[in-house]
Length: 228
Image 1 (cartoon, rainbow, N blue to C red):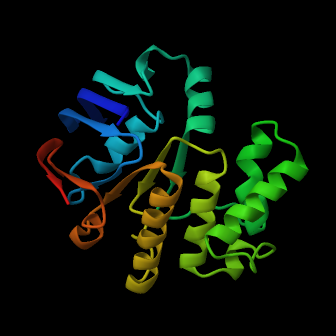
Image 2: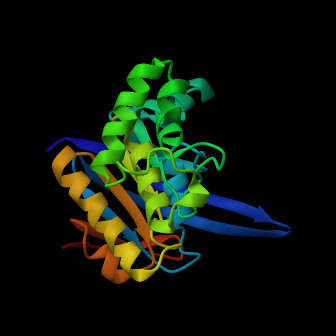
């Protein structure tokens, strides 16, 4: 199976006042195409920092991140923006939906930004919302949807550009237990049916057990890797 992501000895630190915080202290692993990977660890372990680096939202201080054979450190800001738009999908804990837009408008927005026609964008967004169980909620705005429904909209939006890599940062952290499990099972179902690669950051061991593999992160280092 093809390796879609290589993380090689990645280090990242931040200055907080006079203190330097080492968020990642040399992290290495690879992910195969179509895999469902969980990154598990407590708050402050470096999980979100790692996901932001993989998602090209930030650059490491040291090491390499290679996505589909491309070393992201060698890419310009414009090339990174293009990579994020066309090859990577993001699902965030707090949904990050635009409140004035309907579910359909939120999902089709990335396609519109990529220059796709309104008719094509609307058709594809509708199909994805039906796929995630929101075919009857197309015209609803975020304030008219439950937390679980908002996260389903966010997942549909993450998938709209057919990304090779979907990154989810604590996707159940803002949901009740029932809604959280529905979201995790939905992502796993989409992973199996669409063969898209998912990397899910979580602090919940039960949710991590849904994955193919679990990376245990603590204090910026990998403590272990487990096949589920």
